Amino acid sequence: MGVNETVAKPLDRLSTLLAPEMEAVNALIRSRMESRHAPRIPEVTAHLVEAGGKRLRPMLTLAAARMLGYRGTHHHLLAATVEFIHTATLLHDDVVDESRQRRGRPTANLLWDNKSSVLVGDYLFARSFQLMTETGNLRVMEILSNASAVIAEGEVLQLTAAQDLGTDEAVYLQVVRGKTAALFSAATEVGAVIAGAPPAQVQALYDYGDALGIAFQIVDDILDYSGAAETIGKNVGDDFRERKLTLPVIKAVAQADAGEREFWQRTIEKGDQQDGDLDQALAILARHGAIEAARADALSWAAGARQSLDALPEGEIRQLLAELADFVVARVA
Image (cartoon, rainbow, N blue to C red; front, side):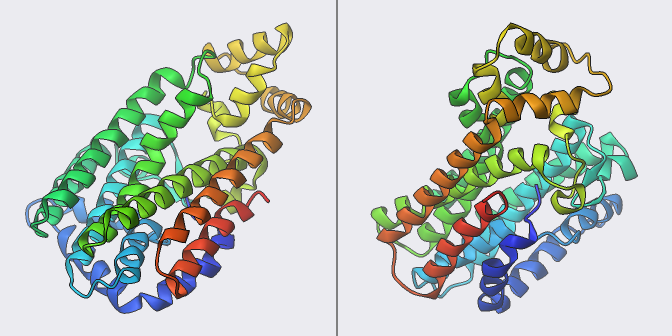
């Protein structure tokens, strides 16, 4: 799920502010994705890592540590860890989803094969654990290893929940916390922990990352039905074609009449999709105001992310993090 250009303004300013630290993180990423014995590993990894992603998650780690006055270098290791976990999950996701496009480019599983994507993803997970242990901080290792487990758990839950019309918003939120928000909140939380911040500030940064990640994913799900392919870096309607019950559809199913429910059962549960079904799905979503309702939820989570920053030191980074929450949802505002 790519970061749209509307997010670039605060993120670019954050990137400029943290440029020397991000350079150190990028150097770490390049060196640790090398493999003496398996040249395919850096080939596959570089395809994703160097695809023009905004490095949002590692940037959050650096920003949290800097905002709380950290002056060491362990946050570089943690930021690289976060990026490796993220890249590993993307490689695995594209295999599971049989995706053909990521960030506007062919996916690694399409250019190489599923086996390479899965195994390189495994390698990056292993590398991420090597990186986090180098901090010698047991608490950050606990946070990041827990996040890795939650991410995997969320992906498995999605396998069963995504095509079950009984899936409600509570289960959807559990999936989203796994597949997206867990790494956002871990990224911000470890930045606070490595800075030696008091518990209230650690919690505030966890809450910020959690709410930001949820808003981010809801927006991504909305754009799948209302965005443009060149904007979102994937094909419009991919979630529908992949039979994923995302928030707009869950909201529409909750209000469906018998005919609409039969449509969702055929297209999502049974996977019997025909020409014109995407247009019909869009019409049903519009009829029930499902996109607008999902948008209201995203705006609410973004507001929660901003509010959590109140417990943190005032300054440029806090302001940029607040603006980032606004810009994430500006894509659908």
